Amino acid sequence: MPEEEINLSDWYTSAQAHARLEANAGRPLDPSMPRQVARVKSKPVRTYALSPQVTLYYKPDIDSYIVEERGAKVARTQRQRGLATKQAKKKRTPAKKKSDEHRAFDLAIL
Image (cartoon, rainbow, N blue to C red; front, top):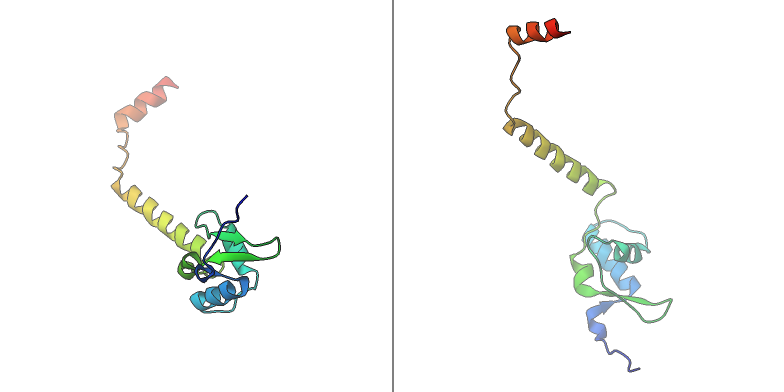
């Protein structure tokens, strides 16, 4: 089986990826952050395993990734959903109120 050739200039080591993620975030991060970022399914970071202990991270994926404060994304999503529901409620027409005749009829049935 032929070995796949890769251009190492397109890949970060774990330490390089960690440094780049810290620079993007503007704050200190845990050294395991590149591995954690690579596990995120919604915005995947391509990886290449040289061995079980050594993993490379694709530069364009790491360069574009910004680690936000814990809970920041959740709060932003909740605000957007709340705004969407408020806008949807404004678009709804108010329910028609029953007239006194209808109320009297409903009570008479009971």
